[in-house]
Image 1 (cartoon, rainbow, N blue to C red):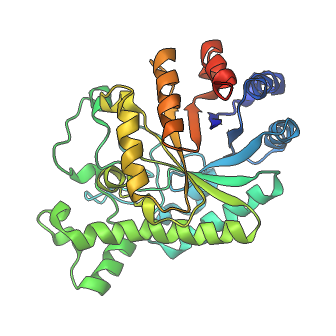
Image 2: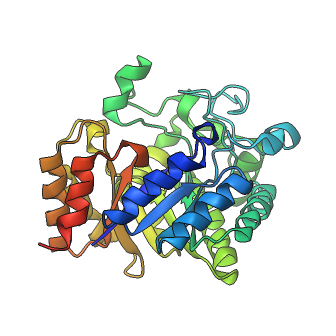
Length: 329
């Protein structure tokens, strides 16, 4: 079973910090890294090349629909950002947190913009492009996070329901003869939900084709299992033509214990494409070593390809020891 991690790059820490961290991971049976690739510079190249030199697999961890890291999109393409049911642009009225600034997948310009941005990643020695934030904003947050924002979400609230930009509304009306803004309860309209799922699917599958044509594999960080992903963030990842999926089974966010990972993996394996390799994404804070050991053993028994831990700089020596000794058991 493979051990992976998501590695955020903070350039103020300097190259030696990441060299030492990557050395430690490589020495303890880690197989691959998702390296933060939202800024294109020499520092990224240096870190990627170093990890590759140690024999690690390296994926370009790149935010897709969330464009908070993208000043060009914000300054030059404000019309590409999505709008909620209150007709508020996420660029100027981000919900939940300031970095929730999202592009609209239905706009044809969005794909062309993303394609151009991703093409820059081909200049680096990545094995694959790792898609993240490849969805709509959360219409429902994980229940464990709600107290952080002082809100309740028992129904689909208009401020968190996307996208109602002119492109989405016009294209839906052309297909179905009605403006979705006129629905008394949009959550009850199957065609409207499926329309938004298809918008994301179309972007993913076109990007995947483009990436594979350039000799790279495609992986993605996704919500825990397909039905939950569809309901919470309009993400139908079981329909994607990608090579590897990393469901973020952050059981702490859902007020579950570590046994929930097994339940989610069962649901994933029953619904995913057989061509997709499956990895369990795990959130380190508040996780016990014993729980991690149990999860790894159970996942190996289920023939899951591996696990990926977040964040990389939070992996303690006791967790490293689990990874190092795992294949020897």
